[in-house]
Image (tube, rainbow, N blue to C red; front, side, top):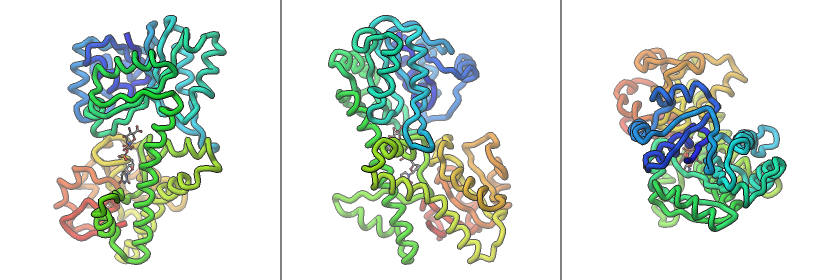
Length: 406
Ligand code: SAJ
C-alpha cells in the first residue's frame, strides 16, 4: 500500500492516478474537512479530467484518511513556502509529515518527497531529523526526491505523458520508485542523485521566470518608446533559435514565482540575474497600475470605482489564486489609496475581496475601464459584451477591436 500525504493540487491527482493503475492507495491530509468531502465523493478544486479520474479511483477503492498509515511507501506532496525575510525554504510541512511517518512506518520504508525543495534540503534538514529519531538512513528509511512537472489546466494529461525525475542515493531504491511511477507515467523517467533532482526542479522554474522577466522588461522598454512589444516579439521569434515568452501583469502560481527565491536565499551572492528577474516580475502589478492611471487621465476618469479588473486567478482557465498578479495589484492599491476598484472572475465563486462581483453583466455595466488581468476563455466567449468599454488588455488576448496594451 502507498500512503500519499498532502491531497492538494499535486498530491490528489497523483494519488488518483496511482489508484487508477490498480495500486492500493490511501490519501492522507491533516485538513479534516477536506477528508470528509473526499470521502463523500466531493472534489475541492476544478481541473480538466479530475472528476472522471476521481470516479475511477473510487471504483478502484482508493481510501482517504486523516491518519498516517502503517506501510512501507509514502509520497509526500505538502506545500513548501519560503521564509519572507531570508527567502530560504520553509520545510516545516515536509518535516512534520516525515515526523508523523516515522511514528508509524514499517522497517525499510521508502519516503518519496514530491514537494519542491531547494537544493540540499534533504541532506541539510531532513536526514538529520530522521537520524535524531534513531532511524538509520539507507537501512530503516530510504529517501527519494521525485519532483513533478505538471501544469494546472492540463495536469492529468501531463501526469501521464511528461517525463519525470527520480533522485535517490541507491540505484535499487530508484528502480523500485521508477516501477511505481511507471504504472501510470508513459514519459521518460530519469534517475539521478537526490541533490541533482532538487536542483533541476528549481532550475526549470527559474528558467521560466527569467524568460518571462525578459518579455516583461521588453514591454516596459517598448512602452517608453511607443513600440508594439507584441510585434517585436512576433518578429524576433521568427529567428530559429529565439523563443521569447509573453509579457503579462506579473507572475503568479505556487511554483514559478516561488522557486527562484530558494536559489536567491541559498546563494545570495551568486544569483544576480535570478534576483533581478524576480524583481522585474514582481514589479509588473505596479506597472499595470501606472498604465491604469494613464488611461484614466486620457479618458477623464478620476475614480477607480469606474475601473474593473477581470480575473483573480494567477493564469487563464484555472481556479487557483495563489500569488496571483491581481491579488498583488490589489494589495498595492490598498497600501496606497482607498481601494474601490471592481473585480470579477468567473472561476471564483466565493467572496475573497471587496467589490467582487459574481454577475459578469452587472460588473460590466458598472465600469468604464476594463482591465484584462487574466485571459480566461469565458472573456473571449463574451467579447461582444465588452466592446463599448475602454480596455487595457495586459494579456494581449483581445483581437476583435483595438485596446490599450501593457
Ligand atoms: N506567464 C507570463 N508569461 C508567459 C507565461 C506565463 O506572464 O509567457 C505567467 C502566468 O500567467 C502565470 C505564471 O507566469 O501567472 C506562471 O504560469 P505558467 O503557466 O508558466 O506555470 P505554472 O505555475 O502554472 O506551472 C509551472 C510549470 N512550469 C513550467 O512551465 C516550466 C509546471 O510545468 C510546473 O510543474 C509547475 O510550475 C510546478 O509545479 O513547478
